Length: 155
Image 1 (spheres, rainbow, N blue to C red):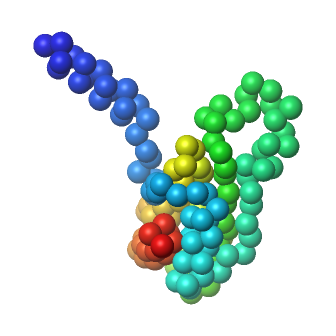
Image 2 (image 1 turned 45 degrees about the horizontal axis):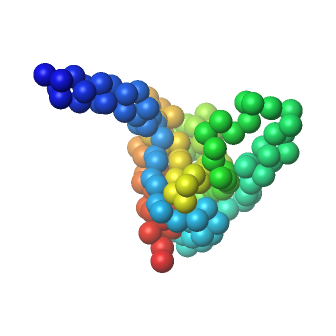
Image 3 (image 1 turned 90 degrees about the horizontal axis):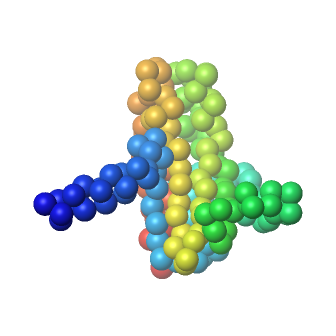
């Protein structure tokens, strides 16, 4: 009985932090800069254009004094973001539902903690539910994830 109670307690605690189904999340035991470079190259190789790069961790570190005890409570070693787009998908989605251009450009955020880099990406299919562009958004999502995983798995 005690084991069952312990198992239930651990399950409840772990499920409280379950990832959102609207966010693609994949981690790799690799330095942030290595994963970031590989993901950026893979996006380009898969037909996406990286239009902007942001070192969010560096920008936040400049606010550390103002944020005080509220600064970086999760002790992330780095946070970087890639902003990217694919013209073919942008045009297709625009033709189906111009309001879904809110998806363009897309972004992926990479975080690092204790040597583990995590890639995060908001799934376009979650945003486009009920839209005439829902299928195109899912195709865009699948193409993006394919590119992200190529970068994550690059050696």
